Image (cartoon, rainbow, N blue to C red; front, side, top):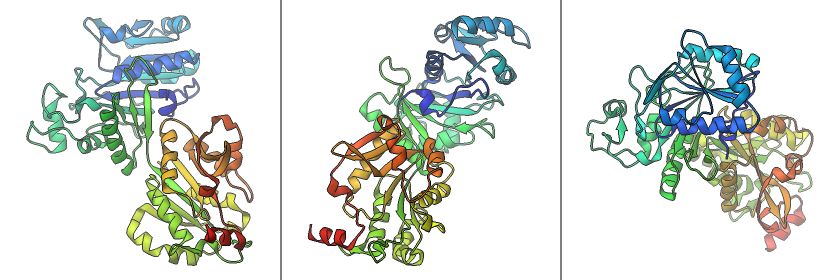
Length: 458
């Protein structure tokens, strides 16, 4: 997955993203990898630092410009961008390190972006002395006010190492932040999650309007990826998205997986007129269908589960009372007062009820009694690897549900109308849909008494 996709940024001179990288364990590599993607897309980018940068990093930029006063030489910058598409701004070049620019100049750059046709500004806003993890000193990081995205970076090679030099930059600061006295204490995934979210750690200096998106870097072998997934899971449980990456690797894309708060949505609002009875409450193996579907949603790998009720709202609520008491905030019942308008209205109700930090939603109907939880769990991996639409397929034919939609598709889900699900969004540009093969039996739904009788015989 490319960084532009994983970071959810749209380089655009009219509204240029200003991305600040802080922390340790791959800031420079991430910054220049992202700059390369922007230039490869035919756009222009300025990189800079508000701290210091080494000669080997300076060499990664095709051109650099020294800012010798309180103003940028705009004509020289434009010429460099015309020639190379990418220019690194510095203030003082004193090998082996060079000093960065005043953060107010980054704000000025963002304001002048339309004139320069500048699609993005990327800032290295922290120093870490090449250590994989750090805690910021009182004067760190130096985050420009114009920042729209703050990316705290953490090297996964730090996990399991003592909270001391030479493994940690500013170890006393880090131990104080985590409340740990013994320098022999080893750095754990739980500590990493706390550090990245701490207002004096990964979130320090974040402007009020800026997003926070940690990058768990160096996930370049199975054990580190496993540790990264554990940290990402902990962060998602606290409402925070994150990325697993290997931005310094020569081969492969820089981001391996994206993680974040997710939801599984059970559509259970219909009147079941063809059945002649509320099919949500039909019982199979001692469990009513809506209870079974809600349980699958909770076990699907999503962080939260939503059940959308409608025609039989009170009876559905009663059927779920016991499970809701156990699941707590993880299970929410959403009533769709417009259920008679069809399935699209239930999708609207679900999307509008999702938390603002929800990154993707899995939708499936209440009436698929053979649906295996293992299938639902497998659907999440293609989304984590960058696919925005993931669906099931039988004999190569895409089915409408269950299916996962990235939050990029939430506006289109809200535009659906009538008694149809999200299948039109899967049929449109079907080549962009990743499919998970399964059987017709697993996806069999129950619409009529005859369907129910056939199910009972299998």
